[in-house]
Image 1 (spheres, helix red, strand yellow):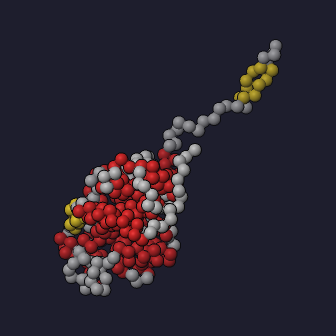
Image 2 (tube, rainbow, N blue to C red):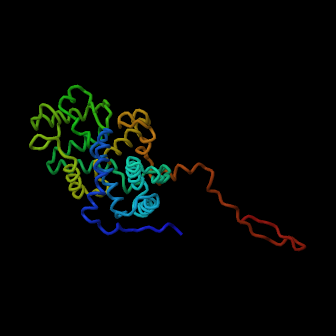
Length: 315
C-alpha cells in the first residue's frame, strides 16, 4: 500500500491567514534575488513554493506534510518536473530553518534515447522558419534563427546587440555568470541585414515599437500561433526547445561535449549531457544488433531406429 495523500489542495485560507503564510515567501524572494538568481528562476521557485503552501492548506508544516506533497507530485507530474519543484521547496525549507523537513529527490536514470514526442526536429524547425517568412514576421524569423543558431536562453536574447555583430563576440551576463559566445557568420550577416531594414543602429536587436527588448512572453505567444499554421505539434514549440535543437545539432556534428558546455553556459558537463540525446528509439534498438542474437534452435524429427530407440533427423 502506498502512502495516502490528498490529491487536491485543502480549503482556501482566510485572507489574513494567507497574508501571514506568504510573508516568509516574500523574504525568500528577496533572498533568491540576493543570490543573483535570474528573474525567471526566482519566479519559478516562488510559484513552486506557493503550490506547496496551497496544497498544505495552512496545516502544520512537518516532514509528513512534505512527504505527502512529494507523493502527490510523483502521481501528477513527470519525474523531472517533480524534482524541479522539490528543489525549490527544499530551498525554501532550508531558508526557513526547517531543513529537517526536506525530502529526497527522485532518482532518475539518464534517458538513453530522444523523446520524439517532445523534441523539435530540424525538419519541423525549417517549417517554422518558412511559415514565419510567409507570414511576413521577420522579427520572429530571425529570433528563431538566433536561438537555434547560438544556443542562448530566451532570457539572454537582449544581449544580442548591434555592437556585438561588429565585435564578432557576444558578452552574456546571466545567472551571475559572464561568458563570451560566438555567432555563426551566416547568422551575423542575416542579422546585419535585419538591422538595416529596421533601422537599428545600436543596442538590442530585437525590440518592440517602443524600443524595449521584446518580452519573452510575447515571443512564446507568437511561436504558439506559428506552430498551428506550420503543422508542428504545439508541445514541441517553445524557446527552450530551440536551445535543445542547437545542442543536439552541435553534438552530432562535433562530438565535443566540453566545448558545447561552454557555449551553453553550463558549469557541469553532466547538465550538458541531458541535452545531447541524439538517438531515436528505433536507432538505439538497431545499435543493439551486434550479431549476438537472432539464431534459432534446429528443429528435429524423431524416427524409429530399432529396439525402441529413436534417431534425430534435422527437419
